[in-house]
Image: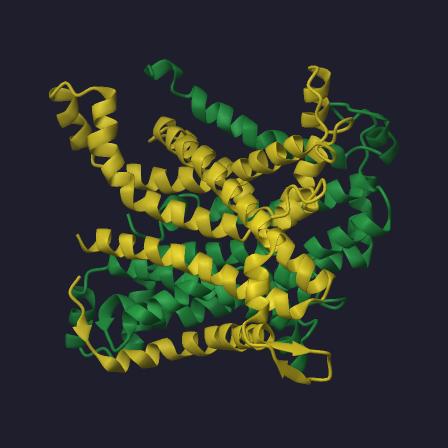
Length: 267
Length: 287
């Protein structure tokens, strides 16, 4: 392929990615009659009514708040506990370390459908059903292994001399870890948080199973509304379009590290 | 990196261990419990031995969903990997367009999975959606709620749309770790485009590609929400993959015994393949 036509492949690919998103967004600005009346590429009677419903009806906007709450709790929790563990895996050999690491990864491989019912029973038994904490804890199942995996990759890229020099200078482990080590791998932590955010934000099966009213995520609100109130496609499209925004914001922040993060820090 | 032997490092792993074990062991034991016993409620259990396992392994319904699952996973890997490599190779390496490409390409990965399903449902609706309308007005008879082939094509294209970017980003990360000197040396030697790909770029991408295929295998084998929202497993059972079938048995029919046995068989299959991949990956890393 010559240099002049090289841009064609990524451009066509991005166009392919954007088309369904455009379909969704343009539908969110249409009235129900226009949607059901047939296909139109641009909204004919541009309306913000669908968005107005979402921003004024608590069952809708609470869905967003609930999702954000459990995603943030999960992200903070996962990264906090994964940091020391990833350090241990990247710096030391200890009894059963390789088995433990693989066992952690197996949890990333567990199909959520397998765990849906037992999770429901477990979190009901400990009275956490329908709380943000329940979803945040349940998402730890796959987010902690992922966080350990990514952080371990980033930490292995930091030379061990850094640790040794600090200890020679009389730093205690906790002081070294917080003052020196964490700032050194700040980019890695940012990327890990991004991934925890992402996987907790997009998951629905467990989030839906573990909530009914008080902590219901936006994604579940959408499925319910779609089935109960008939054919409100415009409303559904508006709610869907709004779920893209938080993702777009976090991608923007980590855009320079995102590729390395997807490679789990191992490039 | 040389690692020191230190069993005290276990203390650093304990918080992770407790949290993950809480979420993994107790539910897994519940599943095991149901898989070997029969219950009629009230926490009364009767030992059933391996009855449920035999039932599941012999059931044509399980075989059918397993075959659909394997075909689906095979198809999406066969499409996404070459496409991902092609896009990564042609992506700009430097300049302001890099960020634009990365952000736009990562966008599908951050959309909740049921929104992905709903979006493609809207996109593919025969009379109203952009894709459905275009195909039908081009004279192609397309209706994904009625025709199994249309439903399959839509599901596969949806997954390609959703996840190819993951492979692009991974390959891009691998490619950007190649120093410019390598390309200059290849240029001086008069290497062909193919030779550069085969002997410089592909070896550098080997490791990230293993991760990519591993992740795509795992996630596509567990796929539930997107096809469930898009087609509901239909028309008929034609797009009922393993997870959809499992949820139908467990929560739809409340057949807990067979569902639990199927869960374990299902989990073991994923585990086996991932273990093989993991071993290969670790061997590559040690080299």
